[in-house]
Image (tube, rainbow, N blue to C red; front, side):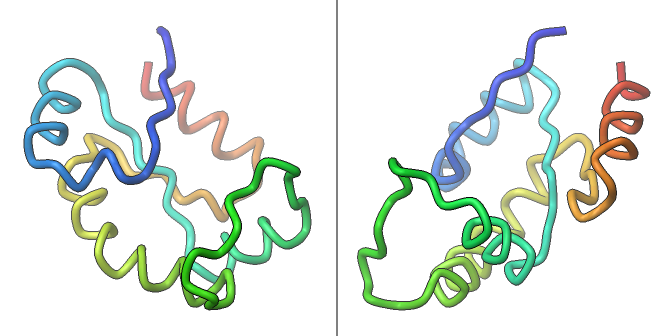
Amino acid sequence: MPWYRRGGGIILSEENQRVMRDNGTVIYLSAKPEVLAARLAAEPQADQRPSLTGKSILEEIEEVMSQREPLYQATAHYVIDAELPVETIITQLTNLA
């Protein structure tokens, strides 16, 4: 089964939501903003987008997630808790196939 990762903003378009649901299996790897911010801070990438608002990473994630979380949840066929151990996430994903 091929896997495709899409940018988070793709979810903002209702047409994109429909296309994703109708043409594949949408899996949302869900994690709290604090967890996402800690992961980004722990392993910064050279190509990581700088803040465009001057806010902290956590503040930006919280702001974006408040808008997108309901859309991710509504569009996903499956929601996986991405705060679980990696081995558990892999098992859950494998069991979806």
